[in-house]
Length: 190
Image (tube, rainbow, N blue to C red; front, side, top):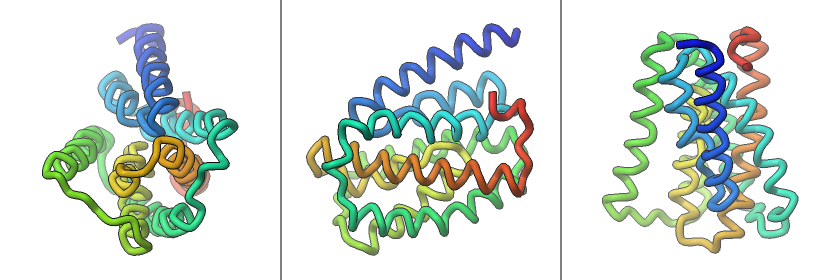
């Protein structure tokens, strides 16, 4: 596929994901990551980590006061631990297989939600969701759904603010660590 076509289609997917994320607190990775992976797997996860770290900062300008700081701290602790597992996946799993992980991560969260699982919001579920979020967010740039399951019964402002801080910090951490360890090429960051 021509680079211009990849750029345009990926740009549209990122714009659609940003629109959804601005409304519900996640969506950029869910919508754009599968599209970018299908268009050019070599662009993953770097390009989505850059977009995933930048977008929440803009949305947080209006939502920060609604943040669940205790919950965010537990989820971020888990996210830190999960980042190590995600880095292992990025270094050990071939790029085409990461595409399968992207789809699998999305389908797993959909399945848990479809089964009507109502997970309590406490330190253990937040820590666990943070680990899963760190793993999937680092490896596939889709880190929001595990934590969103925990916050799904909260008010929209609280969900958006808390998820955005977790995602922004998590993507920034993943991007930094992957850049240092895996040495993302300039092509990954396009």
